[in-house]
Image (tube, rainbow, N blue to C red; front, side, top):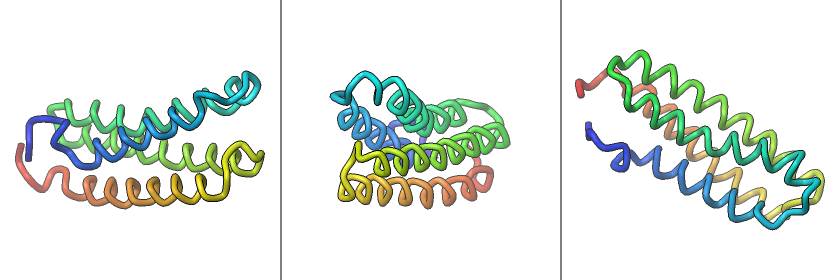
Length: 121
């Protein structure tokens, strides 16, 4: 296992996803930004941030715990994307693309969680 967070695929996928969310919402009007964007950006940023924080911990149980926080952020992000589509802030195509990426991140995070602790650092 690498000693660099930048070498971790799940971290990179979630960081790219968060950047895509940011690029999409940065032009929304004030009301949408104040009500949805703040929550959506925080939850999508939190996915990679928690993976990084866990990666930096010494004990694998702490790492797993932060990955569980990250998994919660995935579900929260999905909720905000659903609201964004329902409120016509994003198109059905944008929604499907983001949800697909989020599902891939979720799947790979689950694999990573199972991997943690099985291999010594």
